[in-house]
Length: 142
Image: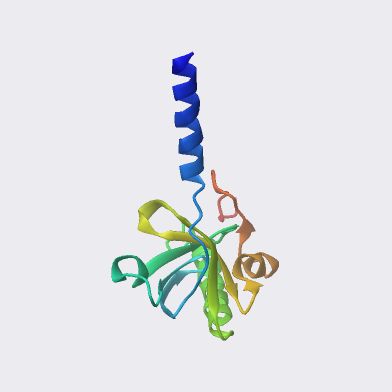
């Protein structure tokens, strides 16, 4: 019986830790944009180690990769990146919501520019697909 209680506690705490949410924050500066769903930012008031040139991955969308597997994916990635550049520049503020820590020491977040969701905008413009983890679909036409 003790074993089951301990096992339940371990599983419960692991599940809670995996879905940890770190709040919302306004970006002070976008320092670089890698592709449509990944860019780097500075966050004023955060320690440099986690707030200076920190990589952000946009939640809820998968966009073509700059280093794609075929010419059509690379071309689509450049167009999608241009869309993200314009979208991020279009507003007066950028907010990261529902912040989580992902692989590669980057932030995973819902990205809003003047309350407009970047992931939804990419999907509506056909520069991205809905994505909630797991195996990605390819962007190359077969």
